Length: 101
Image (cartoon, rainbow, N blue to C red; front, side, top):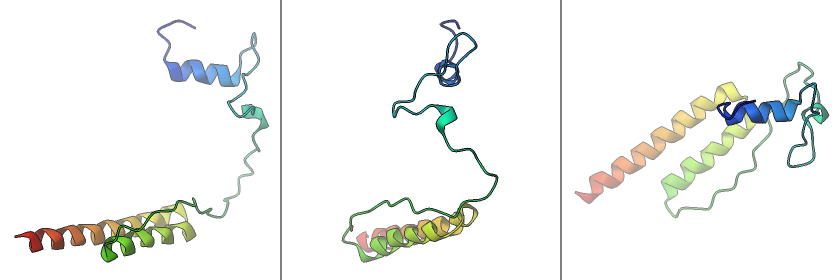
């Protein structure tokens, strides 16, 4: 592989190995072939477990809390939650701007 080969391509070859060199281990000691095989079934959604500190603004805190609703939804349904939260945050910012003037 030459110096002009993109880094991502070199990393891919290193991870997969070649006939001359076995695959390299990942930082955690796992190799790609050690990963569980895909079964073709759709897994249940798993919460990300992200925690967010309160901002002190009730409207913003309510909007951020609403993001947690996406944890219980399949990925294709997340957009509705994100759009709702985005609109709520925009409304809150607009209200703050209007009170400044």
